[in-house]
Length: 317
Ligand code: NAD
Ligand code: SER
Image (cartoon, rainbow, N blue to C red; front, side):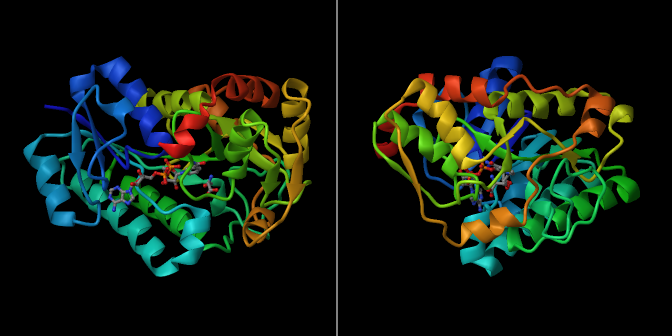
């Protein structure tokens, strides 16, 4: 039976994390779990379990009975969706974390990955090259839940020795599955319109710079963090991690090098205020020093690989 579980496996990150973990650990050892009745076809190469992370007793019993030792907990509402349903976002983003932290505190689980986000920062945070340790006053329910989650992770490590590890992911860019309701989603959606040779309407203004990362870097970074020796993990809240940083206008210019006819227009909506409260770029020197993080993809490389691989049939799948 699988010894590693990814909860929230059918989403943007989970899909690629499951595939990479199955390559490394063997498909039968990596269990994908999600609220959905069925997983995407691309995950059919290994076990799948329908699971609601909010069903604490079911999750506890399943993990204990199956002797699962490593948990990647990805199920959450992202920033834009969370603003539309703050009560539920708080419930989902926090209760699942406690279920898994408690399993580790009781000795059933030995290692946890739980993702944080650049959303832990807020309007009073220095926005350029945002340090690992700085003012953190998030103004979104998503950011508040991620910051609280970080505090609880560190607390469970300090009080109970729980080996929980985390990264403050920037906006993640990928082509295997679609993004799930974040403020950085425009930077994925744009590629589908460029491939369809259609104009793109961006929900952020042209000069809104945000930290971003290609998914391959994010997955590699996650697995490097998870395999680093315990004693080298000095940050038990969550590590800053940087890939690249760009504005919608800069991204458009890069896409136009490949698709010169591509056009963009701007219609900022409620997500603009969220983006304006987040960093423009990130200082990730702690991750570099502690466990050797280094990104492979800058903006140009990211655009090239996205334009080559985006499959517009995903939009109707
Ligand atoms: P996503 O929305 O694409 O996927 C989330 C998955 O969780 C979905 O498949 C959904 O069905 C599942 N899910 C929802 N409720 C569930 C429940 N009650 N029980 C079980 N599964 C449930 O999200 P993602 O982009 O893959 O993000 C995963 C994690 O990474 C989240 O915690 C998110 O906050 C964090 N993160 C993502 C990004 C990004 O750019 N994608 C950036 C920073 C942090
Ligand atoms: N990409 C995520 C979002 O926009 C950042 O956590 O919500």
